[in-house]
Length: 433
Image 1 (cartoon, rainbow, N blue to C red):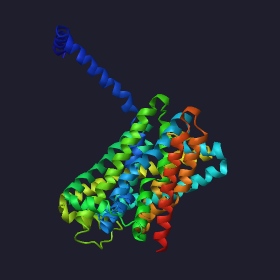
Image 2: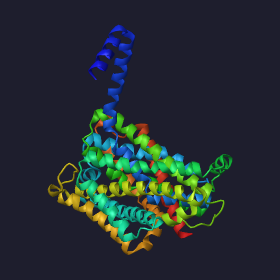
Image 3: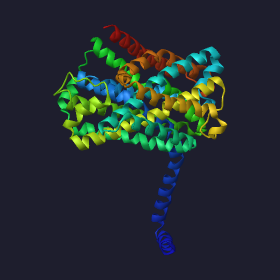
Image 4: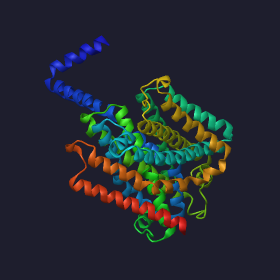
């Protein structure tokens, strides 16, 4: 090693140009390190966004409507970024979580109302995540009384034995399994001309179509995402100098999660719809059985299962931590992954209750796993409450230089209002039809 180092030094001295180029390269390399250290909360929450319920919603969209719901997946990318960027802004420039800010700005009653909405959304999410785990177990003949406790135990181990950074790294590693869905979409061999034709001819006034639009909106913007990312930014102690990198973290995550949703939709539209357009995809098992014969029984089932497990596990971590943080911010108990479990008993207790409760309910009442799409519609119906608080906080609690105001404020309000309208009206219309 010493010889190599000496040779490299000699070569650099004999060639000033090489030395200059090498130094610049090293500087560029190390200039990226602060950015990479900031990355995490946005990518984690966005990978969690493509949870089991979202996967089934995208699959049903592809089976029922082909590629006609593909364009909304792309349109929702900037919408998702605009919403989650506000959580980054609030977390960095106030140093406080979402529930704590609502309590300080609007009072305890409004804070508890927001926390109640978070609790409902988290409960629905955990039912879908553990239904996904159970469904994957079914594919390989593993009974629920084994697959569900194993998943719950892993989730408890990840959080109870780690700091924030360790939990974030593990969550990212697990969530990256979702990238398997890109292979699933490619293996389905979609017809490009039909994809383009369908995508730009949506039946916008069809009640069934509008219901799935609402479900897809609810699958993209969820209450626990808002709580999680703002609290994670605060728990990671990101500051003003990290703002640009944190926004890129969120933007990249928004693109990835919607591309995963698009990949699932394309795979279902290309593999299932041509052969079984009336297929009912209420569960992961039904979706796999319908899709994998056209992807290859063994490899297709294995890759599909990796994607589902990654989605289920990262979403279960994020949703449970979001509720633990959110309730702590409203109730005032200690809340941080940097505390030992014995020093933040309520925080870790809420997380454990979420994980154990979700696994237990799915194990006792497996018929609830058919509610996946309904859970996403419920998220859409909660949007006015969630986005209303978020936008208002960005208008009144931030420092003047970073406050939501002017043209961007009206753009944000307009986008949020349109998103809420599509989500609520589509959801109600679909339920009544």
